[in-house]
Image (cartoon, rainbow, N blue to C red):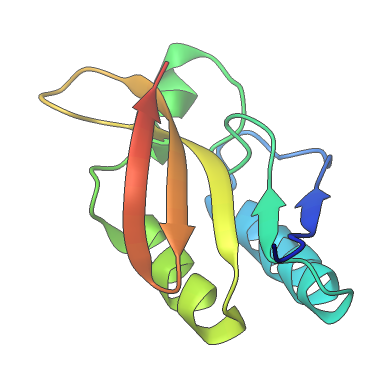
Amino acid sequence: MQNIRIAAMIFRSVSGDVRRNLDAMVHWIKISKNEGAHVICFPELNITGYSNLKEIKNAAEPVPGPITQDLSNLSKSQEIIILAGIEILPNLSILAILYIMACGVLLGLRFC
């Protein structure tokens, strides 16, 4: 049986600042991969952050979309499974999801 190393991240996401939050994820994903992690798990809503409804609507996006494409590329380039939290806009409503990506392929969404 192969051992699997999992990195659990805790960091302060800035509400509505998706680019900053993604940059922080890139930093921690690369460190975790260099330390031998196969999976990295981020806190819920780490991509969009927690906020009021207006800010969440501005940060949320459909899946697939630019944010999930960035995560797909990152997962593939770093060869790591990424679990990340994001707000999405299906049919003009907002849902919090856990986004699961491995080697550039979406493995699943867990709606909360």
